[in-house]
Image 1 (tube, rainbow, N blue to C red):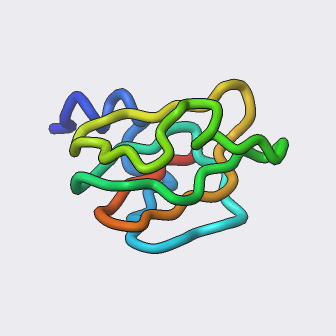
Image 2: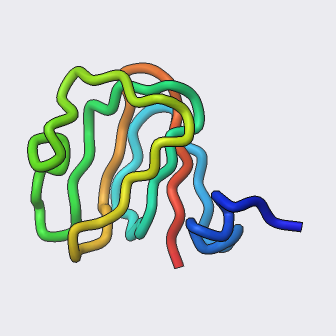
Length: 88
């Protein structure tokens, strides 16, 4: 039985735990696993999503859902906490 978050994120296919930095990805959704400060978040077009989403230095609470703005998320990293990245 899947949880609501797994349904939103598209199930278990392409699921990655992120506790430092990861690049070369094509995530459609990132969910904050443990309260986190994100220090790297770019899409495949090179857009800095930290700036676009105004989350620089902000502690995001566990369960926060980050989705794309049209392009897949290519890289993500945390200064603290952890994330789950979901791709197709």
